[in-house]
Length: 326
Image 1 (cartoon, rainbow, N blue to C red):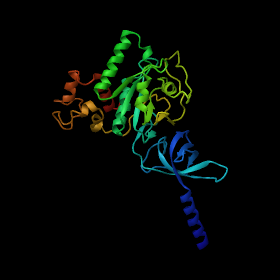
Image 2: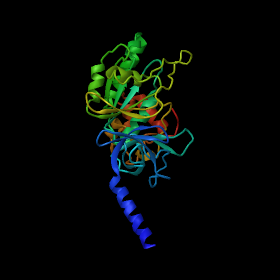
Image 3: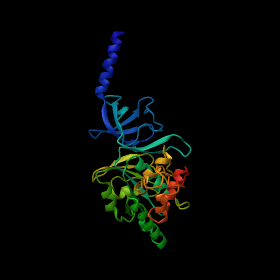
Image 4: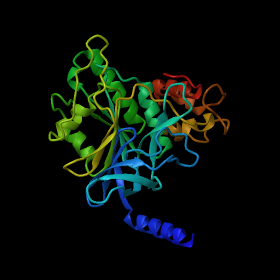
């Protein structure tokens, strides 16, 4: 019995010393590609029922996570087992499905979120943008907004809509960039915003995430598809999240197109903290616990009426406050 116990201790000691550390750069559901500190990739699976204490996430690990792993087969094989996950600097999360209580971690340990939006083919709603921004604010992730397909903005109505959208979000404190991936317009601004950062790209299917990546990194050659002519909506081209190195420094995390973005675990009284233009008025309403909905003496509502806070941003805030999907 003593010999068996000694053998087990030696076995786990050897296994511990064989462990390596790396970053998850691709997630395909049950398998994960981990890039080790020497630049070598390993196809890994999770050891047993791997769960993070207190987590409701459908995926216990995500692209961007730092993990420990060990090689299963020395010599010929290169498959490995993930044995531990390091503490996350941050992460971005959403509801797994519309009616689910579970969550899905989109990515971890990122420097910024880059929201790709379009005003046409397909149209990105301000509700979708604001839900993403609120989540970024909640998890202390800087965000920028890139309006793609500016070559389609040819009518006066579209030009006015683009001007209003950029004004709304610039006034709220977000950096906005207008580009065209297909016509290669202003791509230098887009590339510079990504340089030397780990950037999560998020948006609806069809907004041109993969096309933008191909435009600034032609060697990557991601698959792209035209949008549906019937519904003017995009088709999924990115199936799994993947971290892609940039030749100019940094990484981008390409994600599958997100149809909806459900908020997770927000208390009504704290929601306005995640709208920078409302947060700037903290403690200046008549009541300290003002939710800026129907209370008298609300400075936020005064600012909305005076045009100092965007009515669309405020309406989206009320929708989130009431738990509505917009």
